[in-house]
Image (cartoon, rainbow, N blue to C red; front, side):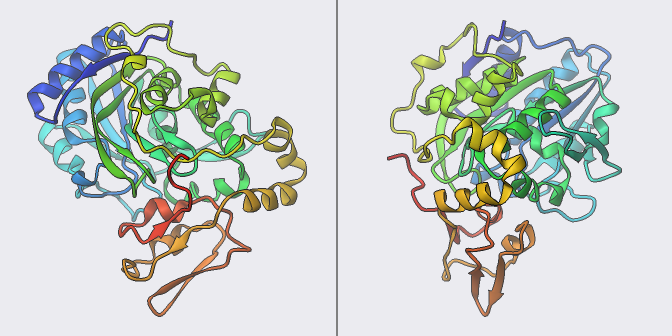
Amino acid sequence: MSSVAIVACENYEQAKVDLAVEQACLAANMPSVLDKRVLLKPNVLSDAKEERCITTNTSVVRAVIHLLKKQGAKEILVGDSPGLQGLAFVPRSCGLDRVCKEEGVRWVDFTQNPTTRTIPYTRGKSLPLASILDEVDLLFSLPKLKTHQLMYTTGAVKNLFGLVPGLHKSPCHVLFPTRELFATLIVGILKLAKPSFSLMDGIIGMEGPGPANGKPRHMGLILASTDALALDYAQAVVMGYDPLTIPIIAEGLRREAGSKPSSYPLLDANDLIVEDFQRIQQQKQTSFFHSLIAPFFLSRYIRRKVKKDRKPPVFLVDPCIQCRRCIEICPVQALHLEGKRIIINEKVCVRCYCCHEVCPAHAIEIEEQREA
């Protein structure tokens, strides 16, 4: 049974968030944390100021810490690994470093001695994952309700991609070029990581060209479930998507890595649909053969097809601050800086949109960002 508990919470006032988080967790049958070591995995796509609504809000993370302490957790750890980070990354700008210090919990650097693991469903492909997974009893995914330019939505399952340290992430878009194939990678990480519980910060989410350059959207919700896939299914419903058109959800259901919500013990997602939510325009789904089987045998062909089907990113001159983050994260070195302008080699670009995710200046656009 994969129930999803949804609770109304109007703002980030700590007392209100504490109450809403506890209500959602109890209604969703959060597993016992008594004498357990628990790793909390928030969404820290980048260490951005909290008002940009890119990261899981500190009030939500703090509320979960409060509840775990109340429920007798032995140790609470918090960690994530953005796509671009220096050594010993500490999330100061978004406020999570302060929360960890004030609450007496340890921030974990995922880049320290990661463990290489074979990812299910990827025909033997291996990736380094945070070694702390072997040292904790429970993993809690704490995502932010957001759109995603490539995968349409990002939630509890996609949040687990952060277990892959730093720049090891971006080359995955070359190895898994279609949305459907990339979804198999993410679902494989889900099966490997086995999160025990997921709680989503949906108080102020993000619509439009997420996960970093969209607009904050007040949603007023906290969502929780023992099934990360069911939680993402509920999020997609609230956003106004058909959940079965979201590649990660479709692949997760096909792989039986989770299920549709069996019940909503509190608020029902179907009663919370935001009709004017700014969704990412969805492309026609790639056929099963071309998306999941052909890439392993016809990689050049499928990459050409991806380039044909997706628009390359557009780099704006005026807002660009020449930070070079887009250049650093590009997995195929398709970008370079000439004067104050980013130049893209469209023949090399694989349309992964990693550059769009890390741009701090809204200087990169993807065509057809809204749903038609």
